[in-house]
Amino acid sequence: MKGKRIVLCASRKLDEMTTIIEKQGGIPLVRPAQGTVFAKEDELVQEIRDIISMQPDWFIFTTGVGADALLAAAERGGMKKEWLDTIRQARVAVRGYKTTSALKKIDVSPVAESSDGTTKGLIRALQPFSFAGKRAVVQLHGDTAPMLKQFLSECGALYTELLPYRHVSPDRSVLETLYNEVVEQKVDAVCFTTAMQVRFFFSFAKDNKDLEQLRRAFSEQVVACAVGKVTAEALREEGIERVISPELERMGAMIVTLAKYFERCQ
Image 1 (cartoon, helix red, strand yellow):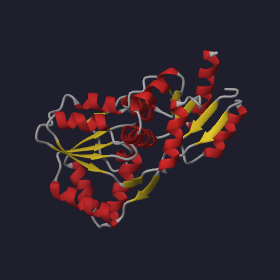
Image 2: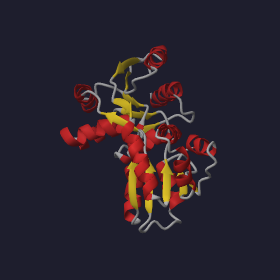
Image 3: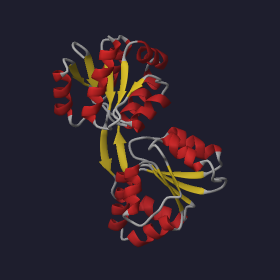
């Protein structure tokens, strides 16, 4: 990694990651593309109340932290029992072992589960079921899961998105700087640590820049690196085929995996 310019899109654990990059001989550049996350309060309680009244046929949970946040909001609104009853009376699908663990704590067993923790895996698990005319609630967090929503629409489901957190876009100037650095190949790699960073960056490019030029830069010279499966999947959904990702889904492991990739390419 000696002399390589490595962009970090994260907004946390930056000291740890910059130290690892510098120890590998790289040059870290911080371009936070995460945006700001706010927990919903009264708005979320009302959304939960509406869903209890709806009595959905399906709940699809995509993150453990999101499932926990919904339970906490239901409890704040004095609806914990009603919320749990509503979930238990529906069919439940999950993405990821952390999500499964969160539901296990409230005695909810999924009928469909992603075998590999990805949205594609979740869709495969849902394919045997009929969704025509079914009311489905999709809990989202840092990933808008466009493939999942497309699948549900094509199957005739009536789905409602439920986001425990509100995401505010990052500084436009940061995204513009990052875009220019990538397409002008002034950086060697960009490290994404959440799917939301991917969505914000590529949405900016779609709305304001030349998206194909960005994709070409990632395919020819600049390496896209993801912390784990969900983030890597988000990159591939945006048309990025070469994605470097570690087996162990940790930020430090991501940097080490990237360094090994550069060594092999020398």
